[in-house]
Length: 451
Image (cartoon, rainbow, N blue to C red; front, side, top):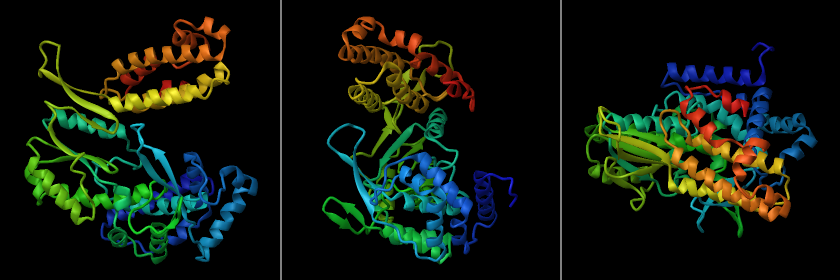
């Protein structure tokens, strides 16, 4: 491999070779992968990706600052030695509870591996992901290279305008906690015969979780929070993808278009899908999973709206005369998504009254940019009513922030605080940014880079 290549380029070349091998020979079972994960450039790239994703320390309390004080080379060198002499053993996973998006009293369980384990998981992911990417289906978008929620929503809108208006909005009960280990290992074994790779994957699945009341052994599932977990979850749900997409199976009678993002998915058809709900529940039961029938529903999208990935999809009558259709599909941020944004802004401003204006705005811009980048999809979403409401909300919250900060600032920003901060302090102009995002061609992110 030429020395002039960067670490990232070397990893990309390795992954392409594995991918093309898997693509050309669909029945090939990879028997020599373990040596790849201990390569110096693979570990360096794994470290870079893990650090880029940030995240807290695990059960050993070692963070990135500690690693850099030790020396990245020394730290990765120790991991490399453990891998090469087959003495690597993962540490227990740290249980962390985070509030769910609705802001209620329910919590989502995360399992946070130590950074050393996240690095090794990333190295294994680098080696095995191309094998499964070669066979994943096109309607799967979650946690895959060069695919996003924007792509999923674009396909949903296209399906709707092609007449696939009957929707089964499906919900899997506690999916990440329910994946049967034995079934998952069999799927991995169908593509990989390298016993060392399979053993290390099994160790992660069986890693004990440190709860408040002590260590608990994991018997099912793959903890949310691990680097390898999204890939493993996609590998298991690929079984469902193939069943639904089987040209000789039950679902073919309904000409179903499936759109999946990790464990969130919808089935779309030109025919009512009432019969499909029961069959889908049975299919998932055979996989050791459970369809949440209370949250899953069948609907006619011409008459009912539905939410997917934080977006609300609804059908509205058109006001434009002379068009081919008397309706259009409006995709916008869901009420829950707007509520979450307002909550994040409130929490951010509440604890930063001691910051100066420039520092406060820098952090607020990050929140606004992240939200607009996600929900503003050119030629797909309509967000203007939300943007206008957001501007009014920001005005109110910023005036309140200045009032609590000092009397002098309160007088200066007692009116039109948002407009003044946009003009004089570089607060993000959300209307201008949203306009440019909505009218940008695919791949044109010049304004984003400029900001």
